[in-house]
Length: 209
Image (cartoon, rainbow, N blue to C red; front, side):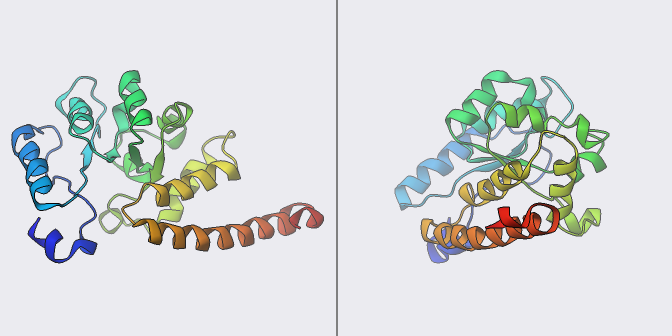
């Protein structure tokens, strides 16, 4: 909070580092919220939760904790698809789910992308931001690989799916409204060039106009 007061542009949100199966910190976190109100600060929660194959395990139950504490984003949320009501709440409250495809495969939460619960989240209308998780640890060379994994894993995915992922990454980011507007402007230009390239390279050149 002291850093947020002096350098507000540096603080995107608050998460916890450590075992995700032991989130029993409701009291200090609620005090943290109250103290922010007193200081006129807003530091949103962005909790990791549900990064597990368990059903009803502590890491799985932390999905409830994160939502009840007002998280704006959920890191991984791999087991979220097992909880229809929680998915409804995420949709109603516009909680963004940070999905990390390659990380989930490396950590054996799923054997391949066709086995991933991402389509179940998307079919429920949840907002998703594709993330790379720990690229330096896993040797991941960039977020484009995560997009590729998702894009080729299903015959249902289209360029419209790809566009929604990209735009949601900005819509649910911690950027200011002005920064989002500038980002959207840049994206629109780059997206138009990308679609033009696709059409001229693989489609009817006349459709590119």
